Length: 238
Image 1: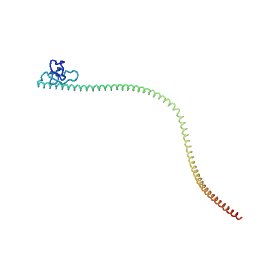
Image 2: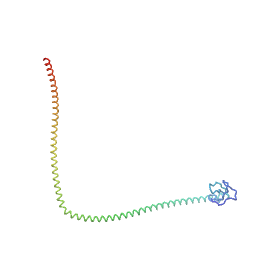
Image 3: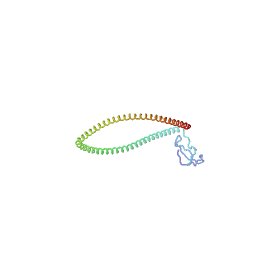
Image 4: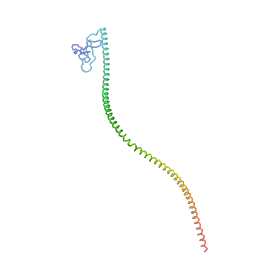
């Protein structure tokens, strides 16, 4: 509906607020272009008062208007759906564009890095070639010096081999001496075992002698005691 910007002061109709109504004209549905009175409140909720001024339209006209409004709403829905689909398509295109721009930035950075790496590799290759050239010169010089040093190396090698042979011979002698020493050590150990056994036998004999000496002392004391008794008896006879 749309307002007519005029109050119905010439009419006695009052809304639920007991206020003068405002004149309106219906804009949608089957009551299109019919005038009616409604609440004139500008602030706060409006009441639901409605009083039609124009009479109701004929049924055939209402049916026709209903079809027209249905067609209008369907067209609006279709247009809204198309606009929504277009908006989604535009959003996808924008996202794809943003992704492509981002990929392009990364590609530019990677390309710049690749160019810098290539330049660095070329510089290193140049330095390597120079180093190889210097190395070749050094090798040529070394070959010349090696030819003169070969005889010296052969002499040193022969001398070293001879010394190695002497060392092997000395090691063999040492092993032989070690074998003899081990044999002598075994013989000494056997002798020591015999000495220990003899010592143990002497200890046993010593203990026997000690027992025998103890017995002799014991018998000696008994003999002295008998002699004293005999003397006492003799003293009594005197």
